[in-house]
Each structure stands twice: as C-alpha cells, then as structure tokens.
Length: 209
Image (cartoon, rainbow, N blue to C red; front, side):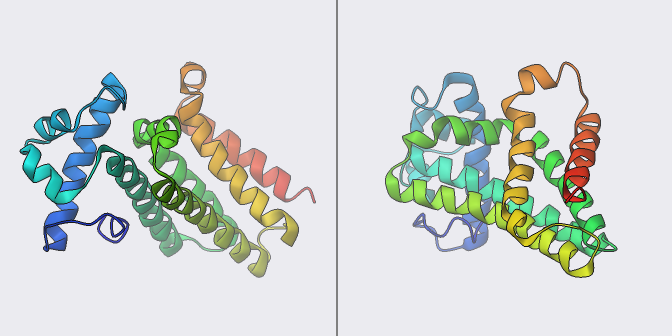
C-alpha cells in the first residue's frame, strides 16, 4: 500500500512500518464502517479495533476520511498485482483478457465490503481526496484498456479502436455489479457462473463487430 499512500503524510519514517500499520488500520476500519456506518464510527473506535492507541493512529493518518482513500489505494494495489500476474501466464491478448477478468472479478468478490464502502461514502471525502480516489478508479480502468489494446495488436481480439475505452469501463462495471447487486445475484449464481457468463457475453460483443 506504500506507493498508493503517499498523498497522506505520516510522522513515521519507516515505509514498511507505515504500510503494515495502515493496512492494519484499514482492515479494522472497514469492519466498523460496515457494521456501524462511516459517520457513526469514531477514530477512537478505529484505533481500539486496530489494537493501537489513538495517538499512534494519528501518526499514520490525519483523519477518518484518510481511511477511505487508503481503502481505495488498497483495492487498486490488489487489482494491479493480480492483473500483472495474469500477464505472466497469458498466451495472447484474448487469453490475457479472459484471465484478467476472472482475476478482477475474484478480487472484487474478496474485497466486496471495501468496494461497496468506497461507492457509498465517496461523497464524504474532501475534494482533493475525492480527486485522488477517482484517479485510482481511472487507473484500474486503464489497466483493461491496455489489455484490450494488446489483443487488438496481436489480432486475437476483433475490436474497433473507438470501442476500447467503453469496453474497459464495461468490464469494471460488470465486476462491481457483483458487489452492488449481490443481494440478488448471490442467490442465483456462484462467482464462477457469473464470471463465465459475463466473459462469454463480452467476447461475443467484441467479436460481433
């Protein structure tokens, strides 16, 4: 989480310690936010749930809103790591796209409380932090733009240039839908069923042009 956390100052100089502590704080805070709501949760409660003192908490972040940015940074870091792993295994652009979508959907499934929290509470962020969160969201979308371009270049994906960005956004939304509509989808589909169906629909759309 260290490189994503740079916009938030820390009094602690050891970057590895900062990363570890901030992850500890984020994990405890998300549980509280889900249980009580963002506004009803206090920084003192976050400190207690993290197993650290309130004074120590403020050595690693400045406000409760900082936690939301760190949550977004953590989601981005996890997605980027998994898509990088997919690149090492893929045979061509099409194979990379399929592997990347599966890893992305699995990541969203694992972090669904984090994803839902970001979209429910983004309005609580100050403008500068909101800008950073939206920037991270755009960076995740761009990862899929790059993957689609690889497929276009090697001929394994038949996609017109003007449709690349929209397709990348569609992939992100489909992944997030597993979280946003989980109250309905989880009753009828496993993650594997949902993923296979969405991948099939995307590939059909890509190759229909």
